[in-house]
Length: 123
Image (cartoon, rainbow, N blue to C red; front, side, top):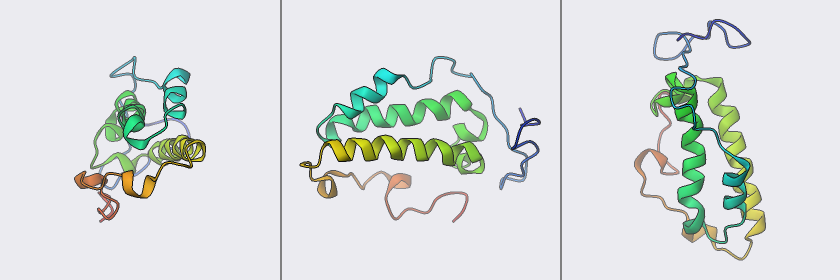
């Protein structure tokens, strides 16, 4: 339901409503230390891509509401904190695997995930 307590209470969302969450719709979806260590022990982007996406997606599913909708998840301030955390995991992986040619490994054919794709709902 609508967020009515805390620092983001009554937050106006760009979809015309208020910030909403349905926390624990998928109760076993939080990232574990083992998930993170599996990414950090990887040696290629192709080898960790699925797990990194899973870590990323789990939180969107767990929080639910607008965070669970790819078109509206940037409405939730938690989106930005979550993505900063994913970036932190990515950077630690990158630092650990400097011999990997990430510039040519990174997939660019994922529609909304393409580096030049507009971020909804801000486009």
